[in-house]
Image 1 (tube, rainbow, N blue to C red):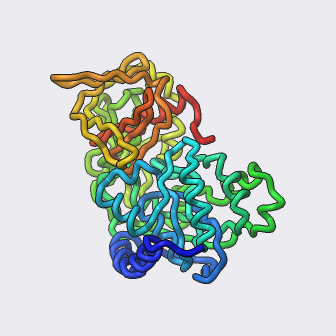
Image 2: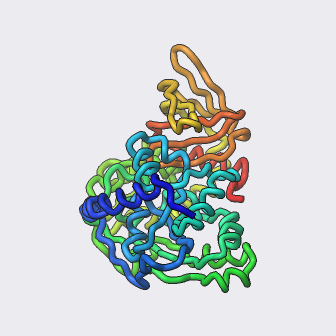
Image 3: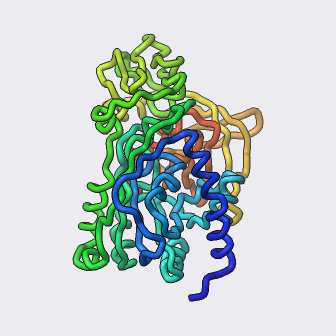
Length: 386
């Protein structure tokens, strides 16, 4: 199959901008790449990795020289500059999270036929709390149908270098990767999609706090607790809902005071839980209390136009939650969203929460509490990772 001009242009552009992007990434992250080096002439394969932030696509390429097209959540294309880079230069494949996307699937196989490898993050989202998320169950079916080798690039340390919820990231954070051929295409042929999923889920699993207990890197990160309200929605001292926030390195509850201090190793001092993986598991056990509570915060409401991949800004609203409903109001208009009718919730970046509701896709931006909405929807409506 002849390669279209857009793909050749993208290949040339990537070759030109790659050194500059790696230079920019190197100012934030030091990547220690271990394991196999994947030659540029290798036959097409599918590369899988765990997901910690937007640098992932460049981190995993340190030991991979092949031409790759990455699968990416469609909502990430809404930011104009980023969307241009992902569409024109990276030629990333947009996919709606949680939905069967025949266009994305077709594009994947077109790229494989053109000689490109495919990179994707089976979790579909990067972790808010430092532990690998469950993967999409359709991953095994895709790999089975592709009938190519599966290459693994496992990442460790990226989350603690740049916690997704944080206002500030570490200077010169550290990421360690391990690259290897996880499955040959011959092995893929002998496995069921479920078996493939199990192998991938086990292979990409990472808890950054467990990794840190072995390495004990010091992180130069200012105001280490600020932004933690994006993740923590329940105080494990007094049971307050949306009362926790960060002040410099301290975790504060507006009802009961200081409940922890994040040290230079990114562990929590002065709390029952010294890490956010365990803290998050605890707070999710209290999700029914959260669902039965009431709270208020502000958001910017947007309507998503999928054909043009744009956010259409509706306005700034006060969001009031009560009785499993979100009530948005300003001086002119109001909206009501029943949590039990929300479909395909998705956290994108640090300040965005999107979802489908009555045949439309909405996106909350400028939001500091998206994770609680996501967890409430997940509890009420079940997993969307089919």
